[in-house]
Length: 177
Image 1 (cartoon, one colour):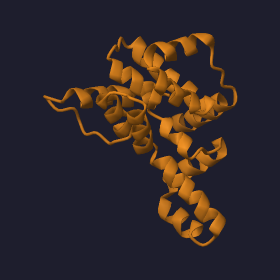
Image 2 (cartoon, helix red, strand yellow):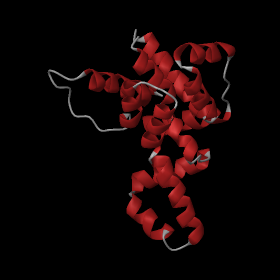
Image 3 (cartoon, helix red, strand yellow):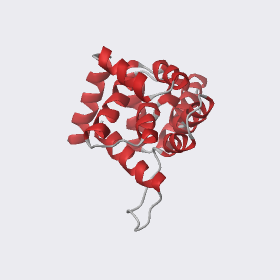
Image 4 (cartoon, rainbow, N blue to C red):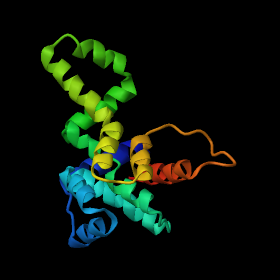
């Protein structure tokens, strides 16, 4: 039931998104200018989501610059294959049902094959976003956090490196929003 409520909330935010002046100032403060251009290329709903992730991290007292930059840019690769909210809903449904069913049905019709290629690019957004962030001059740790933001992590180890510690925080904030 919680996941259903979460998805309805996401849809509402996608429709009713507003970026305020204080949000713009926060982006300017956190990101270097070339990286700001990446942020402003994102769909407004993705911008709002990234700002919510950032604000959660800030509320938790997080200050690491790479973590804050990654919070704003972790979904920037989605602009390589923008999907409408209803298409994103189909992707979520496909994930729930298993992609084998979708691949079989979509391989039969050219229009659906084209759509599945867009979905594949959408699902590759961490790698695409990381490459763009690197081109925009982001530091290697920010790039790594963007690249790995959807990686499955096991239980925390006794001596985790800084990148994995920051990644856990980013993923925790991302799951909330």
